[in-house]
Amino acid sequence: MGVLKFIIKFIWELPSNVLAILLFFFLGVDKFDFDKKKGICIVTMSYQGGLTLGCFIFVSKESYHLIPHEMGHIRQGWCTSWLYLLVIGLPSLIWCLVYKSLGKPYDWFYTERWLMSRATSEDVRTQNSELRGKRDFGCWLPGADATGTAAETKIKTNKLLS
Ligand SMILES: [Zn+2]
Image 1 (cartoon, rainbow, N blue to C red):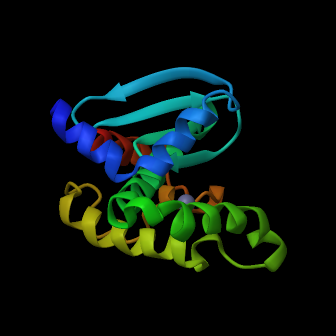
Image 2 (image 1 turned 90 degrees about the horizontal axis):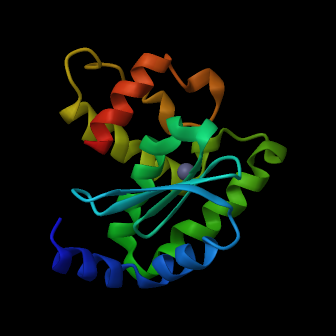
């Protein structure tokens, strides 16, 4: 991704990016990987779980399997621009905190369901023959029961990052 395109993308999601930079000071950043091709920063943080804001994906070392899921939120960011925080960010943060006590599956909520539907249509098209036909893109769900094998998750992660 060229510098100009990155700047435009950065402004396109300015509120999310500003918040992400502010969060750098609170989330205990261990590592910082910039994917030049995609214009995405993968930030390894000391907090558990995953969080996507603008060009930034925050994940803990133990949660790298969530990166494909967070890539879905990256795409939602492209679609929602400045509205991301209001339409996706805040609702999904609240959802993450309450879904268990409501007894609903994680992907029941629109922020995650939208991402799932995008994941299945987009990735089914691009996935290699090894994964073809498998509808459950397990790593898009945080539940261990839906995660699939480590090898599958690795293939998906590499695919999405390459
Ligand atoms: Zn999510």
